[in-house]
Image (cartoon, rainbow, N blue to C red):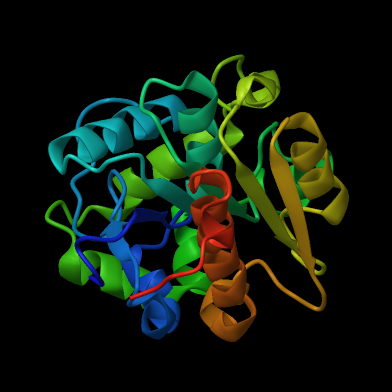
Length: 250
């Protein structure tokens, strides 16, 4: 959607969601060339046979960028999508103009999150807590096997083996990055968000007061200005030196 001649902006949703999670911010994005993806197993995308992992999802997105011939896109990733954006930028196989993450993990989730959520979550519990999302999945996904999908997804979350989460590799990121987090995100603390910001050389930080993990869907007006400002920042950064000072005459 948006302007096909503008800078590409690729959106990656969180775990258990779909590209529809970004519908609330669509109206603010007309000036960009926006691409929205259902990641592996989510939405209308099939799960495939490979074990789900963050590097595997990054492989998929590199293939999407190549297939669509996106020139130096900016990648916006929420939650799992943010972790994938960090993985993409850290490996630098595909040239990115920048990344924006919201509620992302770079390292394994905290013990608190494992004890209260990740260690307990099952397909049955997810069905109980988020029945609407399961109904949507079963209605739109070509596989339609929610239990198989969610077993893969939760296995990725709980996989703390070296190489799954990007971890220290984010220190290799050289493209500009905007690291966003909500003050009241129950999955990613402000301290964890700041840790990612401090690890990336060209990073900028935004902590959004009162915000939850799903602020982009619940209060899109708080998120879209960050996206637009970052895109403007990239344009200014890449403009020829002194270009802004040259008056336009007829």
